[in-house]
Image (cartoon, rainbow, N blue to C red; front, side, top):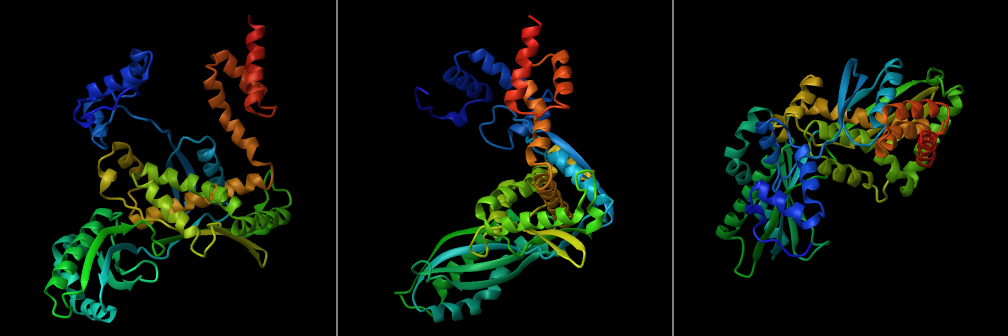
Length: 440
């Protein structure tokens, strides 16, 4: 980049793209062609996508697949998954099929509480502040009535508000710590609107209170929801008699179950393993969160914070053998919505929710947790039996073939060859080169 650009946001879409093409590419027309090739041919649909964010130049496509045969609480579901990583959808589908004949997945909502906070400083007598808070607490509810009316009609709203003294962490630091029920919406805008009104009420009431002297000061720093939702929890579980675990790669089910439990235990005590272990869970979770138009960054942040809740980062899933029964489960916080945001705007998000038979937010929490557990089971089954690379590299084969722009004939010969041979990037490259030498 040679120069800074002034007023970029005010440029038209065409001007922005032309600037990027000319500024960063030696062949601007080639760059322009790539950008335009990913535009939607439907102009209205493209405009819809353009307006999701700022400075839009084109679309970055992520494959949308489906994993069928998920038996969840006695009902079959086909789960849409948006993800670019090979083998994730295949692994989820395989795990779904495995457990469908062994009782399926059980999912339970533990709680759906969301959190928001008003962060402020107070210089004065903390006991007076507590007394003041108790006097005005009802005002927080009444002053937000216009915001909460519709949510209350749906069974949601503000659950409770607490004053928290955090001076042990920062000088003069206090919080209004509020809990919410947002029903089928994720609730970010609702919560933030309530919090900003709490802040206004707090400042106004403080200004008019006769409890404080002129030396007492209160300053609101910020009002914002928290993506850490340890009380917005869902549990997903599978279990069966150990002997029912038998399949192609599990000929000794007792040995498999014991090794599987040990693999989970390692992730429970070893953070280096736990991070990769939980990443596997999030392969399934994020794919569903993306497909349904939810905020995967918020989910990721909350889930990983929850994995550290006991002071050390640890596995989100757990396994045990008890009285001849193998049980594998996880509990994760998931703040999801099925109304609002992209759920009512993005055509493919609406389609995905249709595939899921228009779930409530609670049902979507269950489905998403199950996808995470299925993905984790598939990964651990591979790790404790054949190894992770065999299946993963076979699924990755297409990416390598596409990278080298193989012809239809080469593609066929490559796939035949690697049905019986180990797939690695170097092995595929070597085989392609040998094919091309033969054909010269």
